[in-house]
Length: 285
Image 1: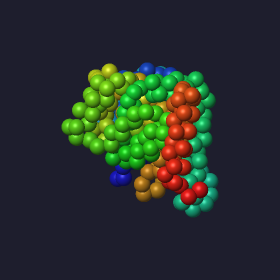
Image 2: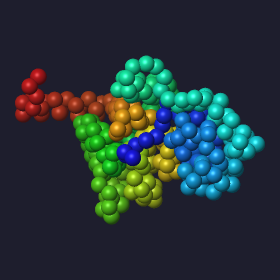
Image 3: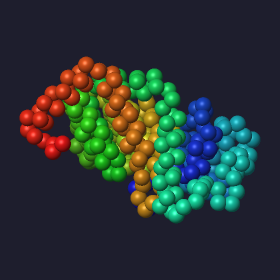
Image 4: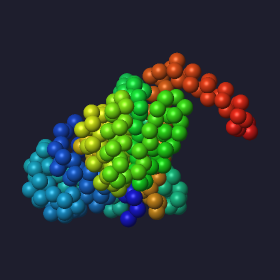
């Protein structure tokens, strides 16, 4: 299994089941398992769902009741209605498998566009992160390149961006050091398969007094247990390794919001960089 494997083509319909419902951590684990296995979820028994989520079978029944159903059989019927039958959850449309993978990414971006309708929320995230000096950015394993990509550009407009892309015992030290230096928030990229160290780091960040903003693949990902702000962007799973098109796009949206939160400083720092680049002849064009 690659460092991914999560939201399929029918996951958005399954996610609709959980909108507006306050779930316990155990129930979020069940919800996440149903999203991960959206194509097959409608045909799994309560015992199979419990095994997938690592919970007890009665927990699955209580989860179904929390969603407003009489029990798990009723929830399973609802899942079948949402996902359809015969190839449920498979991407629609023609073309070869490579074209369908790209088509899925287009759908993921369209879903992200819908999530961004609330511009006030993104603006608030930008202000929160812009005000954090320093700004720690966490991304381990598969998420490390996204953290580095974000930080490369963020460093042009923010005076102190600290990339946290290595796990181990030093990670907690670096979080505490960032908080001691004045950090008030952490931007975390939390992507499948959700390294245990990442979730431990989020807990450490909150213990250090940092407000956690998580860019993750699903509203019911494990990051929701530790983050005050969750920004979902689906991950593509149609190829051998995951596609992070939507999370990368969301990262740049967040960076734009940071720029908008401090326009004068952003302009000053960008102009200073351009002057430096010209003096050093960094670019050919």
